Length: 250
Image 1: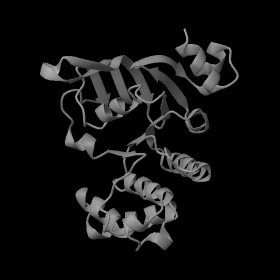
Image 2: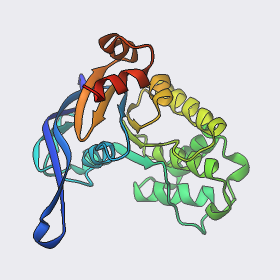
Image 3: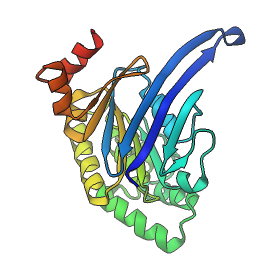
């Protein structure tokens, strides 16, 4: 399998108000292919359509038109359970049962994936070690710092050993030093486990540091797609931020 995700002419509109008269076009004719094992970035300002795209990839939304293939399955209208079980997703504002400890939360999600006791014990131990959560294992979620909560979210995202991981603004609201640590963790487990990752962000530095390729998106449209170097060359700019400004002003 060469691609983990393929889309063709994907579009989505939100409606609101009386008889759905208010319409917001969230995605417009999105066509892209994401390679297996790739860390693919979707970069754009708030409201660009980034989260809508991830919600379609995670089965939470159905597109109005177009097609989506994940793991060689057409999932445009219906997700196969076998595909769902190979996907995990986290957002930059994680939410867990507040009264459960780190260990209990991970055990809870492992049970949702029908892992037996031996499998749960093994994967929970691995995730706690990977994200340096050992000293917080018996700490309740509501007593964790924001950065530690995000580490728990990342640990939870690996609990089913996914082939595809969707990260929606994973460092939003974090202090710069914690953000840097989270980025290093993401890069490390992606390289070690060969997971395909789609990451949305509006931080240029984050996209440049982590992503193999980047899609610039604004108003639901892909403005350009390529490596960081290619995007700077296309726009004849020195930084990703300058490249994005150049593209959005055309």
